[in-house]
Structure formats: C-alpha cells, structure tokens
Length: 114
Length: 114
Image (cartoon, rainbow over all chains, first blue to last red; front, side, top):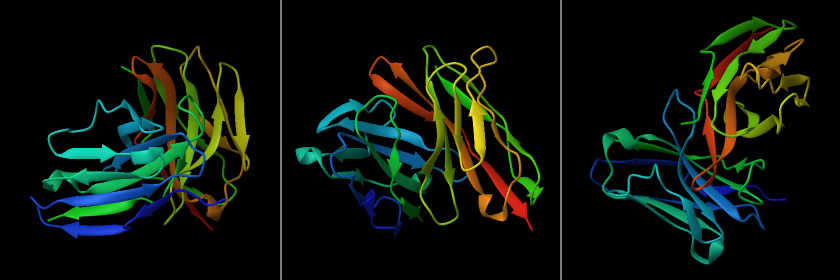
C-alpha cells in the first residue's frame, strides 16, 4: 500500500514570494491534515479536511495561507506572501475517518524563507 | 484548552539501558493518547496508542499506560538499542467543538550510544 506522498521535499524562497505544497493521501482515507512543524517543536495542526469539506481551520493564518482538497483526494496548501517565520516543515497526514484513528504521515516539505 | 507536555531532551543513554520519557496532558474530554516516533530522515509514524483509562499500548518493546488519575502516558522500554535513536512525540486526540483535534507535544530526542 502506497503511503502519503508530498512534493516538493524542499523549497527555498524569498519573503513575500508565494509557494504551494501538494499532498496525496493514502487511497480511501477520508480525512486529510496539514501540520506546520517549526524546528524544535511538535506538529501544529493548520487545517483538517473530511472528504472535501473543512472540519477545522482555526489555526490557519487565513490572511496568507489557503488550502483546498478538490474531489476529496489530493490537496494543496499555499502561502502567499511568505514571511520569514513560515520557515518550517509542512506535514501532510491522512486517516480513514475523522475520529481518534491513527494518522499516517508523509515525509514533509521543508520550507526555508530568506 | 487541551495540551501535552513531555520531558525536554535530548536524552542520551547507553545501549541496554532503561528508558522513560514522561508525558502529561490536560484535556476537557476523554482523549485517546498516542506516541509517534520520527527516525532520522523519515516521517512520523505511530509507535503505540491507548484509547481509554488503564489501557496499555505496546509495540517494539515500548510500553505506555493511560493513567487518568495522574493524566500521564509515560513511554518506557526496558532495554534500548542504537536503532531506537529518534525523536518521540506524545499526542492526544480529543473531541472539540469542531470535531476531533490532535495535539502534539514538543518532542523528545533520544540518542542511544553503543
């Protein structure tokens, strides 16, 4: 069974530029999560989708971050414009449902904003 | 709100030593508790979980018991190996107003010396 796929693995941009990350969850998983992991900290949930609907985006900085999950499968997370403090690893995870099931994580995208 | 606190690292042990990584939590409901592990160069993966009080999760020689009275979920292993060197994250998943939310601790880095 294929795992959660993310691309790109690394990205370096200058502040005020835009960037987009892509995630393809495990086939059949209804719930998709985007996390931000700043160096030395645990992952922080940015947004959670159930199929193609948003369940929780309370910690998403909506003035610069946006995410979509068209057709309830893969998802993109965009930052526009980027700030220095956005430098982090962006993790995508998926689970079968939206309860307390195990989440399966992708390898992450490491973003550096200069 | 809900939170997870785990002991700061790094923790450095010799091979075959006993490991304890402390984790305590605060939650308004009755959360499920997890330990995730991140090996060097890899994504997060579930190590073990417990869904109700007094449950014991176990995997690969690691154990953790859900203690509601002390709001703790400490990770233990009787004899660590060099291959256990990784970052360990304690996490909880609890029902909130917008559905289930997962909160991670800051992570504890473990180094095991041969």
